[in-house]
Image (cartoon, rainbow, N blue to C red):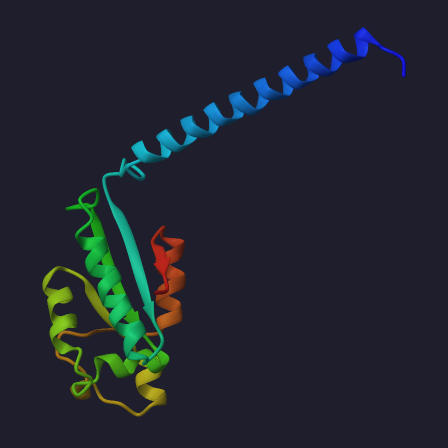
Length: 161
């Protein structure tokens, strides 16, 4: 077995270099974690925002989720006084606006907060529903999909809860 001093020195050098890399990466990761702790979310730098929510299901949990999402949006302190919201129902989502659906209080409260509660007239025709079967504060649009396309093209954010 030959004794090679250069080989031993090289191994020690590589070990120290590897240790420095590991320690420096740990410090970098800790810095990243600290940055994340200080993060407070996006800044609302625009003067006004617009969002349209799509409701195309009659599943109670999804309807409640849409209502909760909109209320959370309206209560976001970054958007206070800077947001316009519409909830458009079509297809099975129309069931949520029927007078016997049990959602009147929640939708009325949204409408009182300025949310546009809109219904697709195509769905009304297809299902042979009349406006007197829906809540009296519901507004009407020719088509739900058309409303989404137009609003989206006008810069509104489309949300499907």
